[in-house]
Length: 188
Length: 188
DNA sequence: TTGACAACCGACCGTTCGGTCGTATTTTAC
DNA sequence: GTAAAATACGACCGAACGGTCGGTTGTCAA
Image (cartoon, rainbow over all chains, first blue to last red; front, side, top):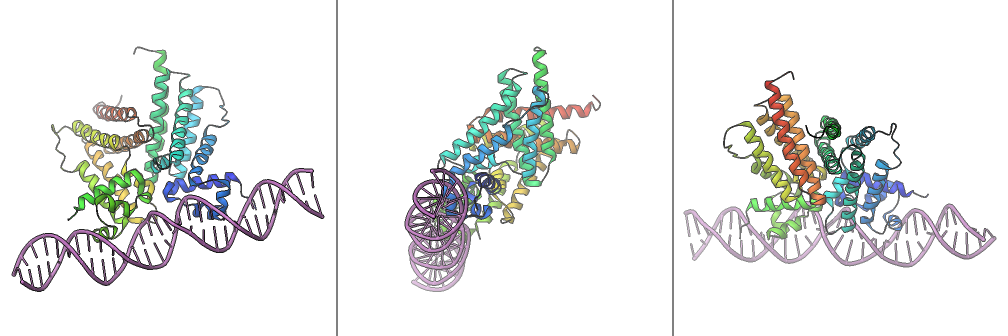
């Protein structure tokens, strides 16, 4: 019975998310998808190659073919932020961050994939925001928003608290709207 | 030649910080401190027992015998926040978060130690802030401050960027001072 | 000088790790 | 129907993992 590539990748994502790169073994992954370890190596040359696949899938799910209802920058921003926040709250951990912490110079492909993953997040958010504010402000707000969401995820992971995530979402949206308003009233 | 317990613990911290719980091996630790693996097991019953030791040491360094210059709550808050931010920026990773992500139900002692570690951080910050504002506000601000610092650390880890950390420190201090001011002017 | 004790080490245990290879089975294309 | 290609598997590799144990070395008080 053929096992879909996407099944392998999304299962690998679950394992990386919950156990990290070093903690997730190829055997665990094989068991989880109902294959033997050797069969995994037909699809992926090595463990490290799973990392870009996992992050690309996640990126695709987050930003791929997203249709904004109104076409307004703020609606689009809120939509993306809430999607990310919901995912992080539900899963309790961020795959990207877990892989960022879990990769090193010994796994250069994985390390590069992690950089690209976060860079893409920042670029996407930044391009939405820059419709309503200068690009340098947009970039900082995009960065701070992602940082807040990552940090709030830690409290979900450690204490199971979801309040910090709610505040992170609210404050990030407020910050973005304030910055957009400040643009039209430059000196104030 | 006797090797100090603190040497072992702080070296274990470096390893946990850079490679995570699963990625740091007892052999690596033994090599790093100039011992053989078997000798480590004289001091620590198992790998997991290193985790509370590492986090206790870190907690001690962060909050132990800190003497505030002025006795003002805001000076004390700034001092602690900047100490944490400096450490996170220099090391590029947070041991606590890496261990939080790297421990599970299979390592209950480590998991508990991580919870205690973050709870202690929140409690300490919260108690400083609650000198100038209601306790529930203090607790939220303490949480958000820690979340911001953790999130900013991710950008240090991934891109080597320190700007996000600077903004995190500045915004957290502003937020705390605003909340303190709002207390004396309740309805505004 | 000796005895006791803490520190340390080498060898070893069973298990798991990432990864390889030859082969069997199923699907697809003509 | 049959050949080729895709899919999956069992058996295996050397290395590394956490952890144990019997024995050697160094320190120091009596």
